[in-house]
Length: 155
Ligand code: RB5
Picture 1 (cartoon, rainbow, N blue to C red):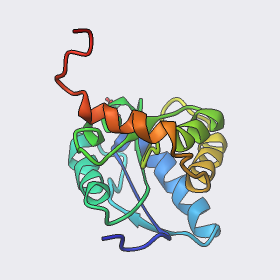
Picture 2: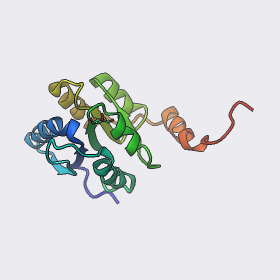
Picture 3: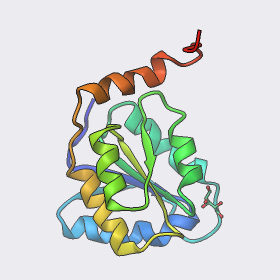
Picture 4: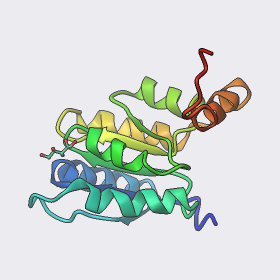
């Protein structure tokens, strides 16, 4: 069940903590409610501890969209993509972010907190929340991601 279209869950490890705090303030200033899944300091932690709870909530449809951050964005994205209804996209710029909403219907944006300008990251989050999926041929392709799993498509 969708709990709220306006609540954006966000989670990170220590490598994403500074960017999470920055994005939280930008989201709040834009009137968007944030649900902070942690981590809550720069003390070293294991990213799956903080990414799994958010990814589960997206997987269950509690929130339509979420944001995750680790140092590189990779560990967070890999963790989130273990869930069948999650499509987590690791992005570095606004164009990629727009495309992954339009074409992949990404429902989680994964950000590389140690490798991205914070202002650009905010523009990306804004684009992520305000770009719609185009559907059509892109829905067919998304369906095939799971339909063709373990299928030999080359005969
Ligand atoms: C933590 O040092 C770092 O490994 C983590 O933030 C992330 O980049 C993992 O993929």
